[in-house]
Length: 497
Ligand SMILES: [Zn+2]
Image (cartoon, rainbow, N blue to C red; front, side, top):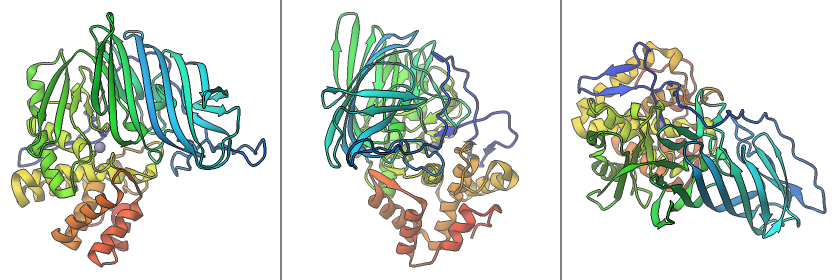
């Protein structure tokens, strides 16, 4: 994610390469929402006692250190089919069916999904009607027959109503399914997905997705993955997208508007499709023209681009953020300044780098968010280095360091963010500087080998900070404990090595 906050002195710094760094604090987007905002469920939860035989209740949380209630235990999802009919875009009335294929990882008498709002009209497990209970964001499913550890099972939830955007503990603005006067967009990090489908909502439980959305004409749909089929139903159109690789739930996106579609390919053959809200001027595409060059450049540094396709989507509304949804990064119009090409290209590079770090290698615990944001921020620096060489990078790093030193209250140590300030400036800028400090300590060759090995070892999976530290120590043969401790956890900003 990339966020901006105007009105703070020193929050934009102009580097001598003409590079504007829009820093990472938040503006509250002024977006109308379809309904009241849901408050997150209170934690802690307790595990219910077994009710029959050895069958147990799945935990209503996955034990995240910052957000223990996110996700659910006792099963592992393999695939989701989201089949959503938007009967009216302006009121955002939905008629939907979510089909989840999962495997029990313990005996289960009941298990939870994360889901907010809507009327659930039918719920089956393995084609048999199941009882269910709802409390806050928790949907508890009680199958007619307990499930055994290792059983594959299929849950089908039918529901209807108007989605509520979510108020996350982590962010001061609504997330999830957002309706505005031009259309609908979805921005769900970290826990907004439950606003439009029942889900095991934690990056630890990735799955593949089929996303089917039916909208009234003349609206169009853009979602993750590859558009497999478009069906004309007369008054409505159905779009079917397929996501090839496992995806963390917070990266699911569905966007509805009238779009201009732009397609191209990187030189190395990665297909790119960009969607721009049709009301936007043609020049809105300019900051995205170099995405192919960026994909091939970063593929050379980190490893092959992870996914089947990439692209950007720009909505014709301000929401103070850009988000790296898997295969489709989305941008609020306030994140795209066609008068500041290099500044906007930095954001474009940032979201692209997340496809490796964030989307393919995902956090195993939200407290390790610097593994996403520090890496994506340093990716902006690597792009500057690509354009302007060592001197450009040095100036970029100096600018970052001066910013963090001047406003320490905005840049806390990146390794231990607070639950109500997950996307603080420290996880971005000081996180990026942590990588540069490592580079200066171990040298370029070892540093870039470390990035490659770390990516290769954890791609399409999850990692924690210790995993990255271990790879860095393994490749360098050095004890790097003091370096990481100082940069990630000390209140005091360390000097650059
Ligand atoms: Zn980011």
